[in-house]
Image (cartoon, rainbow, N blue to C red):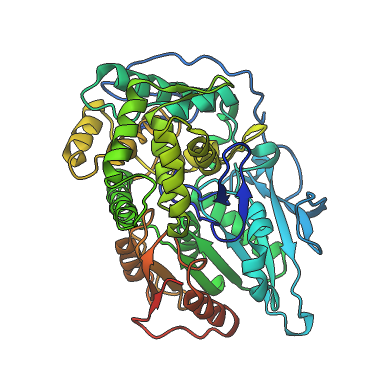
Length: 530
């Protein structure tokens, strides 16, 4: 299972000192633009249909007790207690939404909502819903962590963080134990030409899908983006807003675009930063994303090589490549029993690509790993995948469930081998990880959908933001989405790193001006990176 490139990085908002690693890392760089693993076409909810050519390994049942079923609770908002990390003045609620919008009698499920009331009540515009991406990331946690960046918008907006269905609380997707997820993330994705590694990938993907079905089979058909967009409209109505104001990052752009296609006339203002392209297949999305990560890696390496004292030496690419080869041949055993091989090191390498301002830390971390100390790399990979002292949050499992509900994937193992072979020369580090990450969804119990471009014509002007060298959401995706959302305007940031609002004062100024005053930047505007 791959690192989940595509959720918003909150890098630069704060620094966390990770126990034992001696390095300050930015807050979790985050998850996949398309970082999940969607489902086998033709599979009905509640069944697992193996893909042609894949082994039919039986998963070992996890001892987890996942959510049992929806409950009978009236839909709508009700007050709830905020957690201790909420900023002062926050109000928290539970939003109860129908499990199945086509059959509301099937019961409801809860999602979590945090509201930071507007500071200038006399000039209040309304509520601004915020989504950090993933899919699978907590909007509540994002508002808690990113509040200092969002505070200027809080002058005139109630800032609203919400957890999309399946991500948190009693209806969160839960599949495997911490030990099981550690194994999943540690699997070596470089399986092409290696039957044992490919067999491990296949067995791991099948076991994960089976475990998710075992614990969440009733929920998995109802965690897709279309259902989450309907939840967002229910939240808008529950908050008392006639129109939606929305700021979405990474996967949050897919959620916003879906809302625009379903409810185009209910939008006041919408900003989509780090755009996904709904018109391409999940396989093509993964291949294009791998190419973008590879391009960022080349920049990562060249900047270190240009330093007079690069921690990785005169040839940093050779140092990183040698480390990956060494960990593949002889993984490192940690005192807690975890095994660190090439798979986990590649996850840490993907984490580095999100934020160029963190690269000096990653140079040191990889240099330490070359010298035998992998502690900092493990800390970076754990941040990316949501692993803390008490195990994993639900973001990785929710990421898979949402992506699998949304997308179709190839049906035969030979298709994956062919894709991996076709890109191996151009993407030697990230290509196989991206391609074989789709395998879990080949066993998924819910059928994913084929791609379909949007044709949104009656929404107000939507502001898109794309970075020219975004590793997780390539700039071409923003250009494509602009054509699918009639009247939208694309604001460009020239630079590296995932999403742009956190990296550029110019972008923040333009976005804030549009959200508050509905003033769009001129077409063709290009902002620098700070």
